[in-house]
Image 1 (cartoon, rainbow over the protein chains, first blue to last red):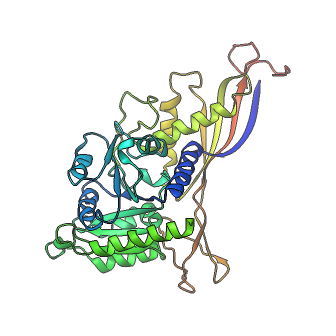
Image 2 (image 1 turned 120 degrees about the vertical axis):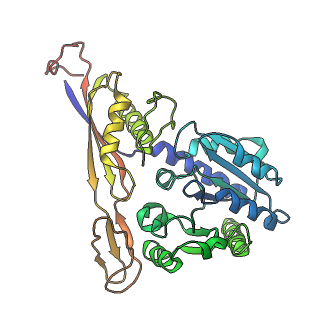
Image 3 (image 1 turned 180 degrees about the horizontal axis):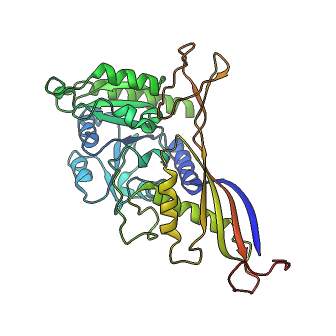
Length: 223
Length: 148
């Protein structure tokens, strides 16, 4: 015979429990965790490569790299002396909190001051998965369309920080920076927008300043 | 977004070409776990709520659900998706501010202030209907009247 059970639970309850456990752990460790999300090729790894020389003398940095295949991104950061664990998703379009739990258990990561989680290149799928991060960063390069925030609103509305990358290429492309700023302001009125170029170094100091401010706030709040 | 279905549908957790597949796997896991204490022979119907702002497409979710349940004991179980609209509230004007389809503006048209999102982020498992195992494996609904 047919029976009915009312459930009323979150579909992603298992992920959210894992994310919550990660958040407690990162709070206890005083680790700032940043979840980087963008299309493939927007410059997530390049931004991190530009960040490392500016911060590594003061801060212990570590990275978790999510990709469908290859260890290339983790290798790029290891060459700069940053411990990096590669998660190969085998086809999945996003990282989930349980994968991140396994990665942070890897002794190679140590207990960093700042942990960068570079998600699989994708503007849609990673949006729904909490990884225990302090905040999400959405990257957008000037070689992509300047209507992208409105076309992929879920991530740009949810990411506290939007980073425009490859700014050195701006003179060569038709990318309306003011239009992007206006879109981001309506999607996410409280958000921060940073303009950067990993190649010229423009905006990297402001990005590192934001990370330092957030790290200090987290540790001040925890103490 | 291109859909590419590999043969590993229903394989290792999280191994999904589209995120709807991963979500469907979680819905199935949650549904089965919700009826674990009953002698559930077969799931008949599962109801979920999906908010408009979750970036999850109900049609793709149903398609993924069919792929996840295919070939198993719950093949043919229906997934019903209740779409929950986005709702935005202006804390200054103390009023709901309707949102046009596809538009994600989060500024109040009246006062220019930031709007709070108060609906549309749901992704909830609501209800599971199942056929209790009463020892009768005949088709067409089983016999009523026996306590499970």
